Image (cartoon, rainbow, N blue to C red; front, side, top):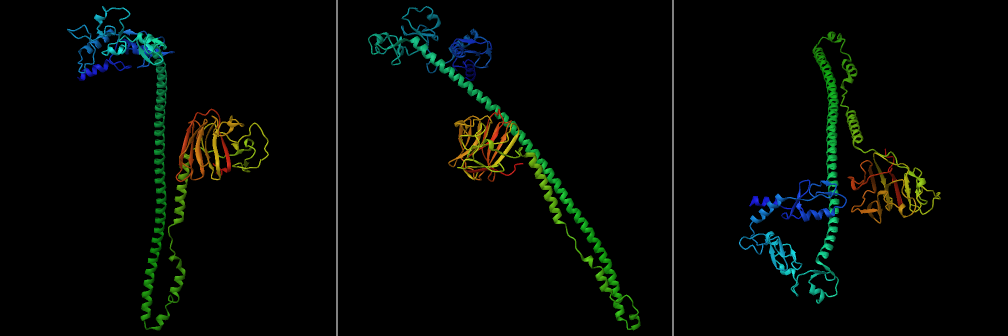
Length: 520
């Protein structure tokens, strides 16, 4: 049974998933039912290709009968058991059942190839695919063959239904015409479905390609991080050795000094012990002349104590110096890490007053924009925003990686975006988010969202810190937004293919937006 099942699988058309009927072969070697491949080729207008291997043909391919495959199919079908009695056999082959190829609706019989060749060909003998439900091909009221289609009631009817039945006077079509009309609609649907399938396949390929790109990028980042930490460990170990060596050096030096002092003091102690014994001997003498003639005794101890008092000074480890060396080493290490992993930064954001609309107030250092009800009496020019309270940065970015950090806590409603300098300066399209030249973040009525190409994506999160970081990777086509809380929280990333330099644009309604100091 397993081999029969495998053979049946090999004999199935990849389009209809049934056993081949009238199998034909394309130039590429793949086989299909003639009707199935005809239907597919009818949907291919500008170019023709094999549905399986996608090999293209300059002209509609000629369908060659695969006689060998047809014989294999017939032998397989004739030798397979039919436990459910679903196969249809020739009504005239009573001695040995032979599979029917057609059914005659007029005679209500099924016919094999042999008996079909001698069957009457008169018009009333309507042939169809083999079926056991011949009564379904005749009118249930007039018992005549269904030959027409009522377009008003969407029903198959006989000639009597047209002339005297309930469908009299209705719009009629022959079954062939109605079938062709339906086939035409089905082909249109099939074409749309095929187009949609191709689009989905293209999206899948694009996603798969992006997935490979992400994996490659992740592997690269993984290697960079691993190398970074290896280098950090190496530098930390070197710093550790250096600090420990400095401690050991001080310890050795202090130990040597201490040992030298001890040695000198021991010598002095021995000398004092000898002199103490001498004086003690003198003190036991009774001869006054001997005692008075001793010249070393007067003020001996006091004078020596004053002379050698510095020997009692104690020297300790230079903890302050060691701590300074440690902190200096760690600081240099962290500074080096920052240079290695931080994105290139915009050295400064300066607002271009020549682009500011008439009301917003721009600070003297050109780093803060504030909402104002009072006109600033600015001259209207082609560069100036005229419809909305907005201002553009002086600098533009056309390559590289940057980030900007902004304080938005002082504004209730605001918009911060990157945009092309070719954006409109008047009318509705000059407002942030109303055209295809903006990529940014905004807050309106305590709701946060990102905007791009006229689209809006609402964010479920809120900005807790009141500070926002915008990160740009121009070549990668990525703009990311972060909330500078602790820890830093990613809000959203937009992707695009940039075709112009990018400026930062601020829009403010109530309050102010300002840049964090010098970003350098």
